[in-house]
Length: 104
Image (cartoon, rainbow, N blue to C red; front, side, top):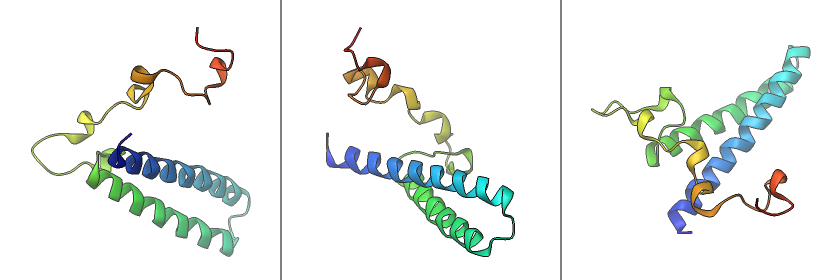
């Protein structure tokens, strides 16, 4: 794996982690809508997530249609499909739960 691909995968991982945390925060805030500290945390991590998503979109491809560039091509449609990553080339990774008994 080259350095550029490694950097891209790390950015995607960081964005995914932040997405998970933000869903957790939003579920908490659904039941605690006046918790100022939780709102501050949500806003802080949401800003980081938006910055990373913008950085990823500028460097690789847009993760959301709102981050598509205003060039002559619709870059949203040119991005690789999530399920077409390394799986087709390398098969499932060791973390693939249904494959724990070996490939079938």
